[in-house]
Length: 105
Image (cartoon, rainbow, N blue to C red; front, top):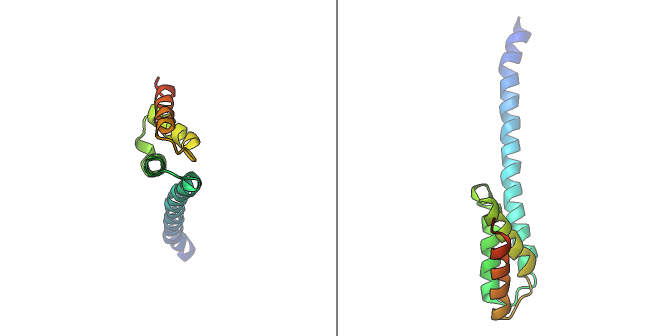
């Protein structure tokens, strides 16, 4: 009888602790992904405007990703793929325009 009682307490406690550890790893993964995005995107940054756009795209995707519409996600992914290393203001504007057009549905 004591073994059954022990399992009725221990099992839910074990499940709860496992869930908490899983939630912690997901939160840590989100922060890690955001940090990785910044490190990857900003490593070749040579323009302050590009830096701000890359930071905004990383934030949108990794800190606010579940709130994005598919076209917003596509726009931010396009920026991250094409902005790093851009220096010329005209080129930056063209990249933004192309990403904007590509992400429209």
